[in-house]
Amino acid sequence: MLLAIGDVVRIRSDKTLGTVAGLANRRTGSVVDVQMNGNVLRPVRPADIEVVARAFKPMTSGRAVATLLFLVLGIAAAAVNGHYVRDLGANWAMTFFVTFTSVTSIAAGLIRIFNQPRRVQV
Image (tube, rainbow, N blue to C red; front, side, top):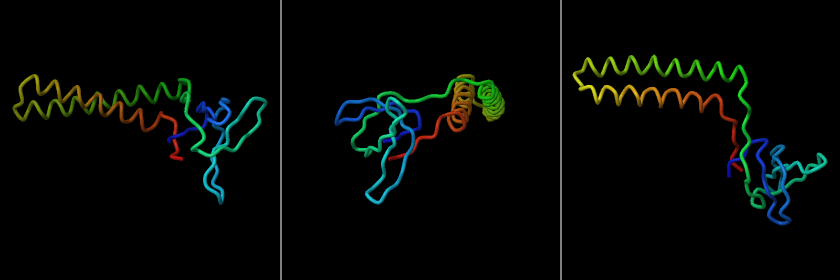
């Protein structure tokens, strides 16, 4: 199971909700610190929880600028790829497909790498 700090989880034994506050390794195995009501931390084994909702960070001006920069980089790379494919003698459909695929894969990949929260396998 992949967890990030801030994910909402349900503890299976008593059906209570909480948010992931941290992860810890102990001699008996890894545990997830779940923050309950009243800022109480409760250590729970990963097998005893289920994810209810994923946490996400709101869009800030820095993340918006980074997203715009990644989109511009994707468009620039797509223009270079499309020009190269056209020079190789491809028809307009193949050129469009390569250009569109380059924009989506490069921009989405950069956005995913740098803007998504880090998830940890537990």
